[in-house]
Amino acid sequence: MSRTARLLPLLTPLLLAACATSQGLPLPMSTPSGPKAIEFVATGEFRSSIGESAAFDEWRVVGPHLNLARQADGSWDGTAGPSQAGVHFDVKPGALTGPMISLGIRRTADGFVEVGGLYLGERVAIRFSPRKLMGATHDGRCSFEFDRVSPTQFGGDVACGTDVTRTYIELLGVAARVEDPVLPQAALALLAVMP
Image 1 (cartoon, rainbow, N blue to C red):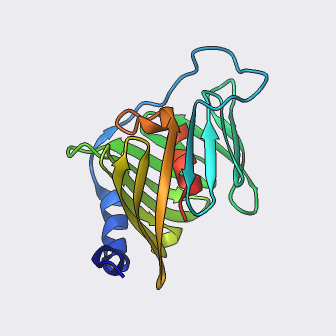
Image 2: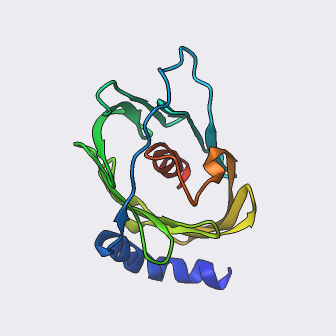
C-alpha cells in the first residue's frame, strides 16, 4: 500500500472541513449557445477505470447513475444516484441548490476548483486543478488523490474503508478543460464517476 493510500483515510476529515469552510471565487455557470438538440451528443465525458462514466453537453448530463437536463428557466431536473432518485436544483454563480443537492463551486486562491457540500444527501468535497484531483465522497468514507498522468488522464489511489484501488479517470472532449470547467455539467459528471 502506498504512503498516499495509507494517509487518505486520515486526511478525509481535513479535506471535508477545508472544502466546507474555504473561501474562494464563486464560479459562473455555463449558458447554452443554442437550442437543445433533439439527440444527445456528448461534448465532454469522464470515464473511470472502475467502470463508471458520465457524459455531458450544454443541456444534459448522462451516465449509468445520472440523467439530468437543463430546463428553460435554467434549473436542472432528472434522476441521480444508484436508486435513480428524482432531483431538481437551481443554479447561480458558485452554487447548486435543491432538496437533494446543495453544492458550492469556487476557485481558490491556489488555483483549485472546489466542489463541496451535499450530493444526494451525502457530504462530498472535491478539489481539482490541471495537475491534481483529490477529495472525499460518501460522507468521507471514500477518499482519493490523483495526479495528472497525461493530458487526458488522472491516476491515483482511491481508499474506501480499508480497500485501496489504483484508479484512472479519463477526460474526453471539453472534460479535459479542468482549468476552465463547463459548469455545472463537469462537476456533476465528475461526482457521478467517483466512488
